[in-house]
Amino acid sequence: MQHRLACLSLLAVALLAACKSTPSGVAQSAAEPPAEATADAAYELHAAKATRERRAMAAQSRTESAMREAYTPPAPAAPPAPSVAYLVPPPQAGLPAPVANTEKYAAREDNPVQRASEQPVSTFSIDVDTGSYSNVRRMLRQGVRPPADAVRVEEFINYFDYGHPAPASRQAPFRVTTELAPAPWNAQRQLLMIGIKGYDVPKATLPPSNLVFLIDTSGSMDSPDKLPLLKQAFAMLVPQLRAQDRVSIVVYAGSAGLVLPPTPGDRHDEILAALDRLQAGGSTNGGDGIRLAYSMARQAFVRGGVNRVILATDGDFNVGTVGQGALETLVADQRKAGIALTTLGFGQGNYNDHLAERLADVGDGQHAYIDSPLEARKVLVEQMQATLLTIANDVKIQIEFNPAAVAEYRLIGYENRVLAREDFANDKVDAGDIGAGHEVTALYEITPAGSPATRLPALRYAAAAPAGSNDGELAHLRLRYKLPGQSTSRLIETPIPASSLTHAPGESLRFASAVAAYADLLRGGTHIDGWSWDDALRAARGAQGRDRHGLRREFVELIEQGRQLVAREADATPRIAH
Image (tube, one colour):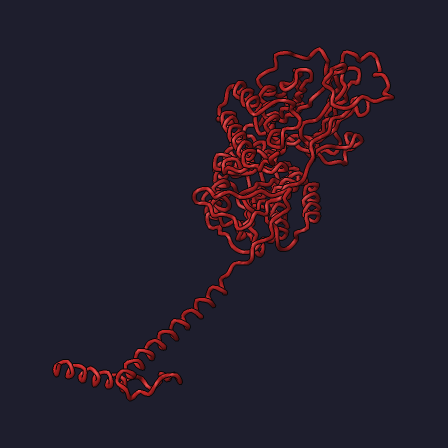
């Protein structure tokens, strides 16, 4: 007992000594009891230590909070209207998920069925863009059903080669062919395929090229599927450039800048090094970038050569000249001065398909979407001649259907390329261009006169179909084009006899019809009668033919993916109990 009391006394003395050694800067709480008691002295020591720790933690918290406020990113943009947006899936490996989806697609409606006796003439501009197909492919690979407005059937069809016959000589820049067969989804209707093939030019004989790479380096491009893929894509083009070519590199972010002045194309290492130095950061001043790019193109202009700006971007123009009308006017003026514009789309989440496609149309160029290095090689290596060298400008097609042979018709796709009837012969009206070796394919669905498969209701006061010397003709095809540098168009005409109908369509028509059906199914499947995903899949598998690059085999796989996505959405749709 005495030993225990002695220990307690020693402990009290030690605690008292510790209390007296406490720093004088520590304030004592008003609620604390007097410090004379031994136990209270121990409490005071503990409280002072806790106070110091709380103050240190509070100071650290304030510092961290200030740092977070300094680096907080801007609030994400409001999501787009439902008609042009879709939910972004979990990203592919290595790709960050977009903060908000602001992708933009132009709203469009399918071409209507026309009665030949009321509207016998159909006129449209050709289109060689393919961006819609590769962009939709990207979505399907991510497990997302694309919005209907992202699906442009003519770009699906024109993504593939069909082996249309080439012109016999360069006296005419291209050759036009047709094929007529029963529609696969309804044998009481017919499909008319129009094929245009441009003459090809060996790469070695291409005229000198003056190219300006206009590259978006804004902060939105900081993603593996954007600027890094873009740099890889342009690096594929560089080794094909020659000493007679000129290359400039212009970038734009918060401001536009010249990275490489006009440089001989054979300085490959210098051009590749300039590309390799590019980094993403800042906002997007696309208007200033385009103006500087055209300035470089004018500085190195090659008379009789290829003068082209290649704009590579995700299309996120948000600073500077952002009005689409102003940009289109700028691009159109430069097109008239001989400088074309090609657009290459990259990335996801904020991709502006509407702007990229429209600027290419106005600039007499092609719009493509690069979703992989393989697509970059297809566009910038394998199709380089077609991408760079234009062999015919303002190409317009006009079909006049014979009401005695055709009750109804519908142009499949080309909705944003339809022209007024009087525009066909008006050489002031801009239209699409054809590059060296390019193919253009168009499909019409036709309901023959007397067929029970008509879609429009009969008219009470309809006039009888006229009879005449052209009873054996199904339609008459007219095509206008201008040679590069000329302002007056040339005319090609050819009748399409009803006797050209074949009941054994060729491989090309069978595959093109499968592609058209697939695009229609993705948009809701309203124009292919009872045809299903299985029917489109069967038709595509049976028409793969020589598939040197595996694109048709890949298309078969995309049909499978599309079918599964649509089926999964149908299963997930809530059902109302009865």
